[in-house]
Length: 297
Image 1 (tube, rainbow, N blue to C red):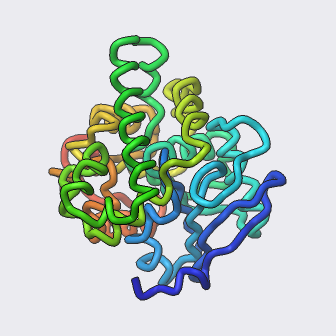
Image 2 (cartoon, rainbow, N blue to C red; image 1 turned 60 degrees about the vertical axis):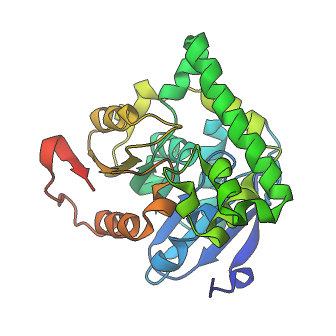
């Protein structure tokens, strides 16, 4: 709350549309990508921490936050191309990428389609695997879609009323699907999260995630990858973490106990420490961990 965020916000023209981004700090580039109904504020607990020794870029994806809708229909591959083009505009050749939920899906796609761009990849409760069932399993798909719609609707309500997120009981209902203990999130932090909700890109982005296969292409990710998950994630099942770890060759996972879908907000100090340790590892170095690379926090 001590940061003058206006000083670090900027507009960047990408694919003939304006993108709203935060650009702060100096050092190795580190790009944060939010999830569905998200915005750059999803990373408020990380940006100041890493800006001490990184050039931190946090984006509003096209169709979310204050960024314009893209020219073409939203797609996961299109979002990966957008990050690639953004890096060109910012003069960044390669970066460390951190993505939550849909942002993790996009980060994985970027590493597959534009491998030189991604030095290291952090997948935080990444989408792209179980969401495939919306196409193939009608019952589960309808339930999952309903959960997303409920979350979207609550977020849309909160984006119209700042006081919703400041009251603990209403905040609990609003963030129940994404946090294990939503009432414990600081009120000002929770209030900032809803700024990404109720945006035009939601429906197209949800459809894009459902129709784009990822599983069979994960073996193409060659960069070191850290997989971070909460054991009480209500949106993306914990079992997906093991699938990502199995299919990405140079990867390992960390599981946070009593944590939901947004571990960067629920466990910010632990999350920042773990991500920093991963980003600073020398090539070939890896923290000892039990049971095939799984570290339980």
